[in-house]
Image 1 (cartoon, rainbow, N blue to C red):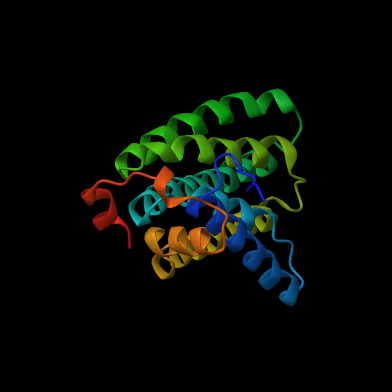
Image 2: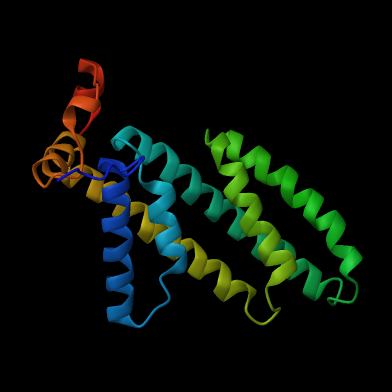
Length: 188
């Protein structure tokens, strides 16, 4: 019987799929929408622990910076400008973007700019005025849960162990994977 090869299927894909399911399951138990936590998992799951911390950190730090900037700027829009004209959001968006870039660099997370910008834009342009604080805080919390869960799973299930498991059940051929010694040592 010929085995079917699934392109790109390996330890990272397996751990990402497993962790998103675990995350969604945990959120179902508490009756909470898992969307942003699962997105945090997907961004946070790297091929090794170092990648998980970098990618997940970018997502989490960016979400936190963008979330707090969005709260502050939208508060100004509502209370100073009385949410009277969408064109008044333009200078706030520009100021927020400059602050986002600056803060990301100050905190030494330049990769946080993109996810932070997404959150900032959503808060300013796509969140109801009565929900912007709740939305922002929930987004930060859920992203944090997903990123932490991805990192924990990456610590618990090493790259080598998952590849060996996938090989044992016939989903991958270890002969097709080449690892140098430093890559194996860097995997937790």
